[in-house]
Amino acid sequence: MALISLVIPCYNEEEAIPLLYPELVAISEQMNYVEFEFIMVDNCSEDRTLELMRELHEKDSRVRYISFSRNFGKEASMYAGLKASKGDYAAIMDADLQDPPTLLPQMYEAVTKEGYDCAATYRKDRKGEPWFRSVMANVFYAMIGKISSANMKSGARDFRLMRRSMVDAVLSLEENERFSKGIFGWVGFKTKWISFENVERSAGKTKLPFWSAFTYALKGIIAFSTVPLAISSLTGVLCCIAAAVYAIYVIIKQIISAEAVSGYPSLVCLILFIGGVQLLMIGVLGQYMSQIYLEIKNRPKYIIRETDQKVEGKKN
Image 1 (tube, one colour):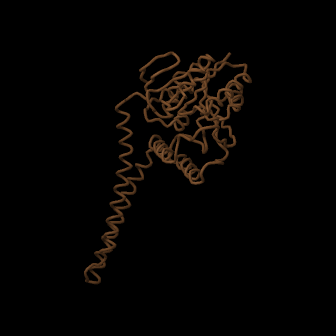
Image 2 (tube, one colour):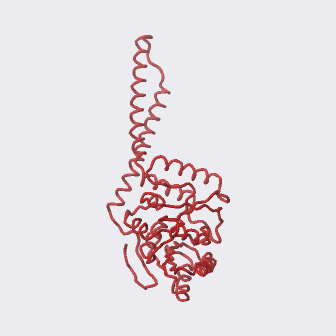
């Protein structure tokens, strides 16, 4: 039978895992025409998450686990899980059951019977999410869809089932500063999008507060678009043109009126405005340079402290 590797990033999910595991067992019994391995990746949790993973592994050999030496982030967790996967197909889902496991049969049918390489999910709405956060998320997806070559659908989740060929393509992109939603779109492959109603967390608290979500979105823009650099250049050109026009205006006014040119307050405002624009553009350049700096150091994406194979100190 075909093997599906289900990758589950976890961070402080001791409340969610006891609810998640019965759902995994239920879906594996429903999909008795395939085999499963459940790869739980512990991002150096501060609660009993790792202990629960060990217990589940002893109880069910299908449960595998990886534990990092520190918190390397969800992106590293997904990469580590995919790299450790052995299945003909691999799926990613959150531990909090916001990604309904009941969609897996439909996703599997899409990639085995309908000719797709990937079945991905997205939320129809954002019920239960703060209004401002929803608006900003919609703005982000609308903007990045215009300025990047990565095909990202609004409301897209990391929850997706992929053929091994697509998994290998995703793993072949080895940048350290990863933005998986963009990577999934950039590698291409034929994808079927499946919608579902937004689901509240089964337990625990969100691990992505607004500021973290904002910086994550900024990382995605920098990783998959150079448009901000073009905007910086264009802004510089426009400021030069505006300055030239203003200089001509001042000269003409002086010739016509033969009076001392007034306007000290407006001059101060203009200087402050130009200075602010310059700092903003330097900041944009700095963001791209910081990404280059982090990449060229070529540090490992994560360090494994412990796995179900008891290997310690492994770097990747």
